[in-house]
Image 1: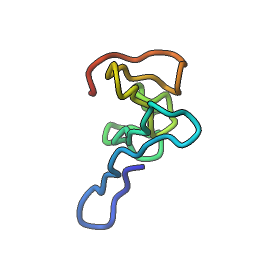
Image 2: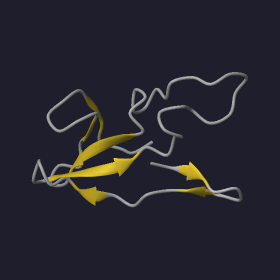
Image 3: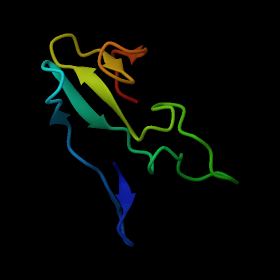
Image 4: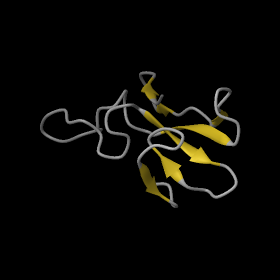
Amino acid sequence: MAYWNGKVIVYTKPEPCKKHPGWEWVDCGCCGGIQWGGESPTTCSECDGAGSYFRHIKSSVYALYPGGPFLSREPK
């Protein structure tokens, strides 16, 4: 998951999902499920607070989890 190292936001590269071949784990870019900025912390609307989502490699479909609620075909 993305995190603040004191100077910049550090993002994690996509990684293959070992339990579900054909899917890869993608860092949402939020901070542990919390959206950056704003007046008060809110749950990230992209990953529903998970801090990551999954991408089907062959079809480029994004989902909260493999075979789960689909998000889109385009990353945010």
